[in-house]
Every structure is written in C-alpha cells, then in structure tokens.
Amino acid sequence: MPGRWRPAGRANAFSARAGQEAMPVTSFNDDPDKARRFRDAALPYLDDVYTLARYLLRDPADAEDAVQECFLRALKHFDTYRGPAMKPWLFAILRNVCRAEFARRASAPTGIDEDAPETAEQAPLWHEMPETPEAQILRERDASAIRRMVEALAEPFKETFVLREINHLSYREIADAVGAPVGTVMSRLARARAMLRSAWLAEEEQPE
Amino acid sequence: MTCDEAEILLSALIDGELDAGHVREVEAHVAECPRCAAALAAYRQMNQAIAAADLSYTAPPALRRRIEASLPQVRVAPSRRSVLKGFAMGSAVSALAATGLVAIVLRNDDEQRIMSEVVSAHLRSLQAGHLTDVISTDQHTVKPWFNGKLDVSPPVIDLTTQGFTLIGGRLDYVDARAIGAVVYRRRQHIINLFIAQTPNIERRAAKTEIIQGFNIRRWSERGLNYWAISDIGADELTEFGEKFETAMQANKEG
Image (cartoon, rainbow over all chains, first blue to last red; front, side, top):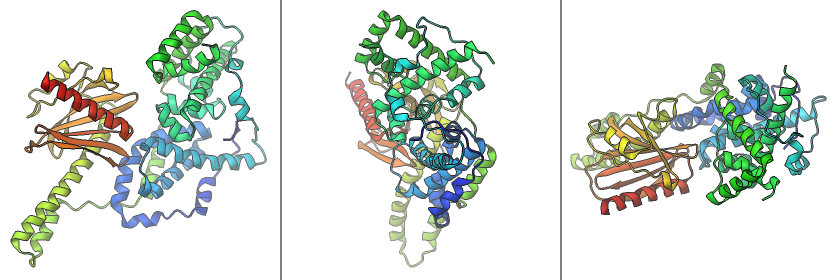
C-alpha cells in the first residue's frame, strides 16, 4: 500500500496498462445472457465504485478511467465470481486498478511522497489528538469542506474510512475488499477518525 | 481499560460493530474518562455531519454510457411462447411426449425466471424510495397493512431481538402477480423476504443459491413460498431463515 501521494498530472494509463492483460471483451459477444446478468448485478453499484475512485485518486478523469477498467475486469472475471457480495468484490477490483496507477505516479518524476504507512499505523493514537483534551464543539462544516478533509487523510486510513462512512460497508465487507483482518480495519477506522477530528479542529483555528 | 484500547473500541461502538460485553466496557470507561467522552462526542458529531452532507459522487452519464457500450448487446431472451412454438413445430415428437417434455421445460424455466424476477424486485427495492410502502418496526402494524392487498396474509415476524430488524412491508410484483415483501435490515444490509401463495402445501426444505451475487434462500411451508434475498453472506442468510422458521414454528404451537 503506497503512502500519501500527490496527483502527478493527467494519466491515460489504465487502458494502456489493461492492454497488457489483453481484455477479451469480444468473447462475451456470444453470451449476451451473461452480459445481461452482469449488467443487472454490477451496474447498480456504478456510483459507489465511482465514489471510491474519486476519493482514492482525487482526480475526476483518472477516476473515470479507473472505473471503466474496473468494470471491464469485473466482466472478464464474472464467470468465476462466487462471492463475496458484489459491492466489496467490485471495490477489491477497483483497488487493484488504482494500485497500478499509484505505482505509475510514484515512478513519475514528481509527486512522490514517501510516507511510511507501516510505522504510521503502529504509532499510538494519541499522537493525532489535540493538545487540549476538554470537549471542543466541532464547528459545522459544509459538504465540500468535509470532503476536502476526508480526501486529505493519509492511506490506508482514507480508503477504510470512505468504505465505511460513504460506501456503508460493514467491517467484514471492508476486510474482504481490502484483504486485511477485521481487527486491522477496526484500528484503521479509529485512527482515521482521530485524524479527521484533529483536521476538523485545525481548520477551525484558521478559517478559510 | 486504557484510553488507547478505548479509542479503538469507541470507533467500533459508533459503527454498531461491538458485541454487548464490549459495549458495556467502553461505556464504563467513557463514564470515567473525560478525554474519551470528548472523543466519543466529537466522533458522533462528525458522523452526523458526514451523514447529512452526503459525500458520495454520481458517476458522469458519459461514463455509464461508455461502460454500457462496452457490454455486448443484450438480445431479448426467448419467451415461453417461442419455446412452446418450437415444440409444436417439432412434428416428429409424439403429442404425448411433447406434452411431458414441455411441462418439464416450463417448470425449470419458470423456477429460474421467478428467481431472476425476485432478484430484479430486490434490486428495484434498493433504489431510493422504493424499499417500503409501510414503514414500521411493529409486526402488528405491518401485518394488517397487507389486508385486502393480497390473496394471502403473509406472516410478519419481528426478529429485531435476534439481530434482524423489521423495517416494514411492501407490495411487489413477481411473475406478474402481486406478492408481499417483508423488509428486514441486518446492519447496513437489506433483506427482502418475498412471500407468495402456492397450491402445493407440502413442505420444501430451504435451499440457498447465488444469483447475480445475491444469496437467495427459498423454502415452502404450509402453502406459502418464501424467497429471502440479500447481499449478506450465505451463513447470515441461513441464520435469518432458520430464525424465521423457528419463530413460525413457535407461533404455530403457541
């Protein structure tokens, strides 16, 4: 899992990368019934998948490419799909697509931000907490401000948080989608909330 | 309990993922620790703000069209009529054999078609505003609501204490007939329990299948067909089915 990264310009990388895997989409032409079943099962989650892609990639055009690639791969593997539930399965595919994009961005001349996610994950939670422990009322923030704060969370905390709070997955489903134990999901969420809370308080000190 | 431990569990508490024992422990800690109490209050506030803000995105229509276009064009599935026509035109087959054969073909065909209609009805119900016609967690409100709308009175059983929250009922259409749907929630997941009359009164044991990524558990009991469908795991859907049947049994004996 890469650490934090900055967008490194516009990429057309998804389809190019996909070419190496040679998507045999045409082989589905002789099975329209499968296509129909896939459409009924997967397309209702298009907005969910697109939402996750937007938060992970932070770029609308990259997100579109990644989602399209995700659905192509899902269609390709739909034959062998036996679960988990459709939504976590699509998210798991999307994460794989995005990983390729992260790797591409990391190898780009700019935009590398080598954070060490492992140590970040193990540091005590209270490092994230504000100095003053007394109850502070969080100021109301509008949707775009909250969105910005969520987008600024470091990985893997952001992805876990988005899967939970915006895509409404259970801990078990998040664990399925990201391939981590439920306990890890739980501690990542706790940390994500602690980080978001300090960001929320920090923004209040310096209003835009 | 230390604050570090509590901090992790606070988050799970908010998400409703803690078992009863841990809930008590965390609440006891929060009652004594102002710092964790402040964190819990802040997290609750954050959650409400996030829920109110709706931070999800909608996929651009062009993206949807591109994905649809990348799928092979869907042909209209052959109707039952054309299947029958095929048999009628097969002059080599004797009339008697053809009748038997058609019956078999139709029965399997019907079963599959109804299953896929159940899936469609479930998907439809998940669209905004389509889930329930009557919203109530009280079985004595939901059950009478069906009166006069169906030719049967579907059993409505409250399984809230057993982990499946009754959230309401709905009139749906499967196989071109009105059918009762009782809606339950398990965490964020919706379970639709479709109930229809069948002339066949013999009991059919439950069978779970996966269709289009949904688990469907179907069984028959005392002249009613049941289809429970959800995106929860097969084990949890089995648990749901068993608890429902146990409760039905208890009602019958009680």
